[in-house]
Amino acid sequence: MLATAFLAALAACGGGEPAPASPPPLHGLRTLTVQAPAGDAGRAWDGVVEAVRQADLSAQTSGRVTVVNADVNDRVAAGAVLLRMTAVEQQAGANTARAQLRAADAAAAEAESNYRRFAALAGGQYVSKSQLDQARAARDSAVAARDAARAQLAQAGQQAEYTVVRAPFAGIVSARRVEPGESVNRGQPLMSVYAPGALRIEVQVPQSEADAIRGAGRAQVVFSDGRAVAAAAVVVFPAADPSTHSVGVRVTLPDVHDAPMPGATAKVVFPIASGGATPATIGIPASALVQRGEVSGVYVLQDGRLSLRQLRLGGRRGDRVEVMAGLERGDAIAIDPVAALQALAAQRKAAGGSDE
Figure 1 (cartoon, helix red, strand yellow):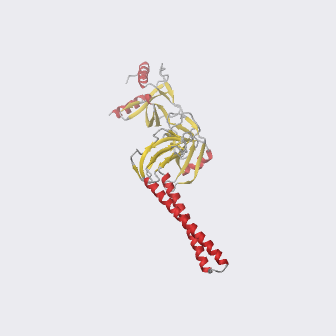
Figure 2 (cartoon, rainbow, N blue to C red):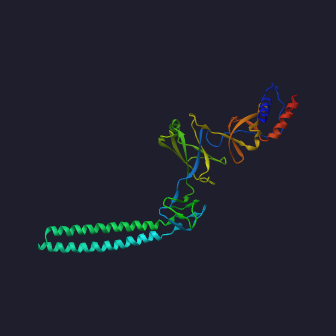
Figure 3 (cartoon, rainbow, N blue to C red):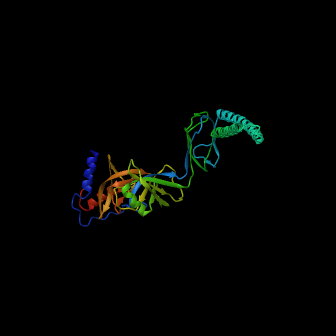
């Protein structure tokens, strides 16, 4: 019923009756001219800001977490210890491999000594050629066994190193997924780290738009707070995704003050005119909206007359709301709906009309 009343108001305010030739002026009514969003006019796609350098650290061995040295939002240096796990099994494996290497070293040394002895005797024909060949084969086998033991020791030592998780680069901890005392298995996520400063956005566009975007070679990025910056670089992927038939576009952000955090949404506007992408939407203050049930609108001033126009809205970003349909760039809207309604009533009264 509210929607019906709202539509009736639209018809009444939208010029259902002939407009007077010279409508009385609206004094003191504050209006706002709808502008294009910050950034080039063109086609826009929504994307998510991500860090160029980011790492999701997972367990490379099993164990129990003993110490966690970093938490979310902590800055860490490259190589800093983020957490430690128990290393009893890993150290035991390393000790076993070390003992096997010592045994293999001794066997290889003995085999080398035997081969040299047989080689010296073979010069005087005191041993047969087959005996010399057997001594050589025994030496080569012992050397190979020593090399295998050395490799096993390196592997066991690496497993022990995996119990200490270090920061791969200087950055900020964005996620922590374990607590001290928790048992973890190989492959279980532990922490996430990203390097601040270098940011980018990756969007998927229809393949029909890829050539136009590649030819333009530039883009504008509009943040959720309304700020816009020119992209530092635009890279269009050379191949389309076979499942979605879309093409990835990577947009690199320049260094900006108060840069958005990774994971924040942003709109990427490409200066192209063709295709079926979503046009770059405009935004208005949420306080200018008139709400009638589930129907939203604004008072629009055109040729000296006020009319109530229905809108199709998008998402809200702070104190602003996106307008998907109902307004054009250059339209003048009333900032205060209550003052607009009063001005409309005064205008109608001065023109000899009737109030709502």
